[in-house]
Length: 500
Image (spheres, rainbow, N blue to C red):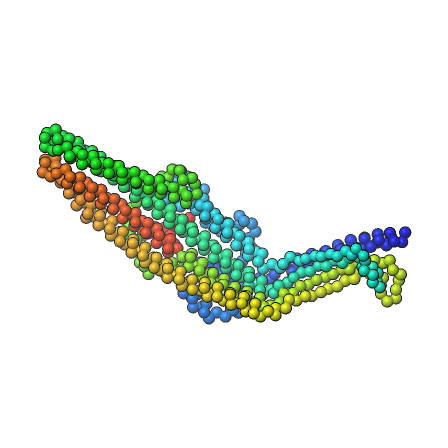
């Protein structure tokens, strides 16, 4: 009976020792997984100045890289609450105003929703990037016990915790935080783009509807002219060719309406796509487009874009993140450590001994350290990080120059469209309407030919279309300027900016 009793005692003691070891391991794990974070000033992406950054990045030593802190998100809802909120009353699918359509797009656009989830993912990445690796546990059970002076060794249990260089974990966390801020700016840039696209398409729809309206008005005028031509033919004062010419012109107007209707449907489909709803959904167009050239200047717009354009801010943040990437690469040379604890289960089926304690379990504590001896590998890692940093640094200057040129181009487009619209409204169209009216009266008395009246009508139709196109180009250019500047600038004095 001695053997079964020994085995029973061994099993109960093994369970007890295993429980003690697991409790100790749990305490070590909870204490080790809370890696330190520096208590440092917070970093706001909205305060980034590209010129200041361009100066600092060339002289900033690695030991003085700006620290940032981060509040770990508790849930996805709390993370998404940092994004622009949409009031429920703005989600009316029958909305007609441009601002209401923008609200709908910001709430339903699939691209924005995808970027929102990417931002959420990047924020949760920050919450785990600086944590210690998971500990490992291993067990060996010997089929044939190992005989020792203290007894038969039947099994051993090993717990191990790898501890990377903590300063490297901190640097990785800093890099992840700034990369998350850059993704937030990508979201803001897409929001600005969708806002400008919605406005541009709304203005395009308005212009197309006005063109159709002008087309129909000219069609009615031609019908009345054909009636006059028929009356003059009856009186023997005109030929059948006048009626045929008028009928041909009506056919041209109808062909133009077909093209305009097709463009309207295409614009509505694109608008519904941006809003995130079926292409066939009805879209209410705006009733008026009263737009004037604001009192802006290129220098003012460039300054605003440098401070607020999300693409520029994102480029600056990526450069700052790449600077932390250089620090992470430099710290790759630091060794990693591993702490281990092993327990060896011993059987007590041997006679007592004066040399060793028979049946007493054995313990061992170990420390391991990696040896970063491959200098060529770490040199290559650091050079790779440096090259990426210089690439992102050049991207900042390129992005600033690109938006500077874009704003210059858009501002010139806006000024040209404004001058063109004013010229049509105040000079060209009144003269063309007077010419048409005079020729209509002259034709009724037989003073001028019918083809001259048709030519006047065709000319005024073209001028009216160009007038509405000029107004549409002005409104679109202003929408694109606000997108490029990164701010919803008021178009009139005392007008509040649109803030979704």
